[in-house]
Amino acid sequence: ESDRRFASRHSNGRCPTQQRDTPERRCPRKQRAAMDSFREKARHLKQPYYIINAWASLSWLWLRTVVPGAELVIVPGSGAYLFETKEREVYMLVGLALLGKLRRANSLHECMTKLFWYGKLAVGMCLLHCDVIVIFALACAVGALIHLIPPPTFLGSDKVETLDDRTFPKFALCKTETMKIVELTCSWHDGADALKPLFCGLAADYAGSKRLFGSIDVARYPEIAKRYDVDLGVRSLQLPSYLLFRDGVLCRRLPYFDRNDATKVVRTRFTRQSMESFFLLNVKASEAARRLEKIEKNRGSEP
Image 1 (tube, one colour):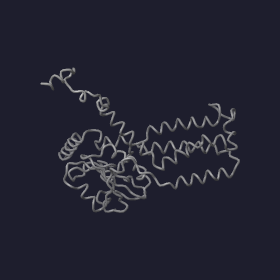
Image 2: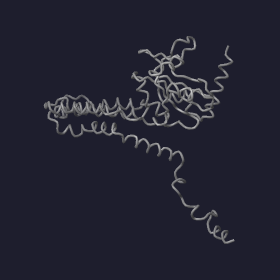
Image 3: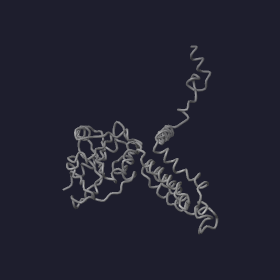
Image 4: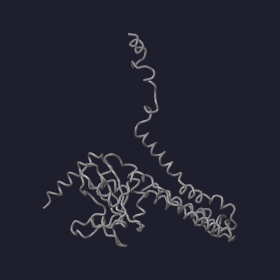
């Protein structure tokens, strides 16, 4: 009876601890997820690779004031056509080109790399008319040291399982409804290395109990490449290749073969949007499974 009288003092019949406006109630679930993603990316950017490159890129703000000869680029009336100085003209034009490239960036790493190149170009502009050979040599030495920094771990790399010839069948060919996307990469192929941040970024956003991501180096295990008709030549259009398995069966692959010519590989441009759409990552796992079953049924009914 006393509990009912206590509860009736409040408009909704709840005790003060239940009425407390917690941050979890004020903040919607999607907003919390976005904040968690932002914090994870901020922690990821604290790696030495990004910190040192950011410092080197921003050093032009100091160099342009101390390097002898920089005034040949900075002074007004130095031959610029669109802006007050030649320096500002170059920075603005390259910045506009950079904005266009950032829109097409497929991963956080690719976005930061493009920003770093813009900063390094600005440093090069400061040293373009440098009269002091020692400063120029020092800048070259610093640039060489920066390139010796080990590459960073990509965001989402912890959610990509590294496979070999023994673990690949257990991972990809087991009879489960879990969808598994496997990257067939190649250690000596520059194009395959360039797309690793994209694949890791997809794993960071979509890996879970119903979707798993794995990667195998087919340069070390060529029998896997041979099993799935992946060319390992220098001019191959199949490095990297991405395979989607479900219930132990290969359902989809990129790049894919031409329908009219089973030996011809269709040239593919990998983007985040195309990967999400082709491998049904932009829908719920249950809906993706339903669509895959429908695709397989239609494929089986073809003459």
